[in-house]
Length: 226
Length: 226
Image (cartoon, rainbow over all chains, first blue to last red; front, side):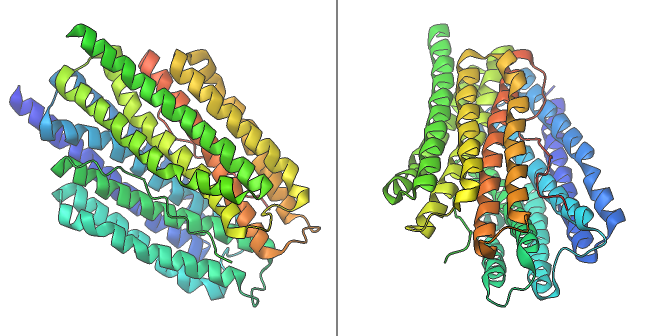
């Protein structure tokens, strides 16, 4: 029975880890579909919503069964509860990536991003991929040192997000309102993707230490200053 | 012991209910601060972040204690787990309202909203208040009939959000890029506030019926169509 119990706990961690990898892959593909105006890739990303919701449902179910049948305590309990929280963040990360792919699909064959703003988005995509990869490692290894540092790494995303707004607000901006609106929302999706990766890290800190620092508690507001 | 147990379960529900009311009040004040360019009210809203995080932390702690010490099963277990989920949505609702108040503060004493878009935002604020009030009742009464209908009521928010984009994209739009960017993000905050109210309702359906329909699983993307 104890063996089954620990096997199930391990399986739950594995499920969360695979879902994190899937969210990371979804973002990588969404980002490429946006930059390359790649409709087929965008469609592939958008279709991931079904798999995302299945992963959420099966992981939640496994966690609920463990709670109901095994009444875990201490670290085991925190590991189940943090899985319940983390799955919500991971699903949101996937959904934000899907929003990005939808923007690519909506404007296809036109590229959403004017050339002058592409480098900023290239970097936001790279930071997003990095944060998601870090979250996957943090989840797998329960590495609280990496977890503690993730918010600082996410600051780079926030800096890029500010650069993006500065470009939109510059007097030299010549791409009109619709493009500015598209880009504002896209920037928000990348930024929120990073926030949720940090939230995953925070829940792993709770799992390991019992210190409950919350999940997506970022109230930093990166909208443009005048 | 059983008495204490049920008293604690009831207290947990009450905490979540109070937090929902607080999120609703925060949105009401944020909305007024935006429409009236009321700096003092905006500051009051922004200061709510401390209370929101305290409510999150104490409610989560109460739920974790119940899980660790009482090993609830069946409806009781679902009630504790749904509280853990719902608290995350309620904190996010409060944070989104705070984002709105921050926009009012950032542009003060200038009004963020041009007159022609005010009526749309008046209605988005009213729908947001309605959805949050409904969520409070759904939580208090565990009313799954109301809960099942909330997504349809949130459709009105999505319609208003589309109207908002149409106004920004119209050839008659004369307020420039910065205002359009501000409004795009504000519209997103109202829309997401509604999504999270629906997520709360979905978690109450899980609580009562055991059917796990997820929380914030909305993948509807309300960004503008060409």
